[in-house]
Length: 76
Image 1 (tube, rainbow, N blue to C red):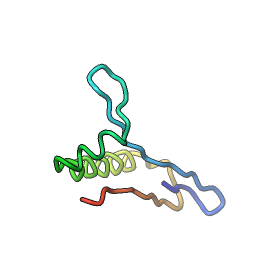
Image 2 (image 1 turned 135 degrees about the vertical axis):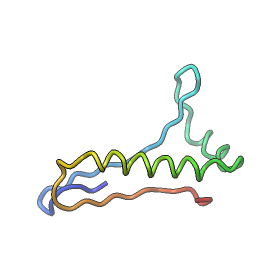
Image 3 (image 1 turned 90 degrees about the vertical axis):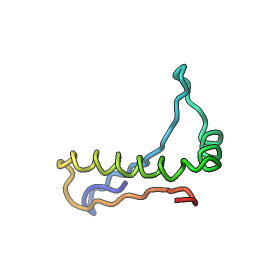
């Protein structure tokens, strides 16, 4: 994300990570191909977009320019 004014921009990157039942992280190299294979990646992408927009809606403290990028799967 790019937040702030031309003089002061704050940059963010959203990364989705998956945790297994034990709490350990699963590499995106493992879960993304699996999610694409079973047709779940579009749902994961949609969840990520909704979550980010919900967080941004609650952040009224950011003034000035606001922009962000979201990487979506090819299926989406």
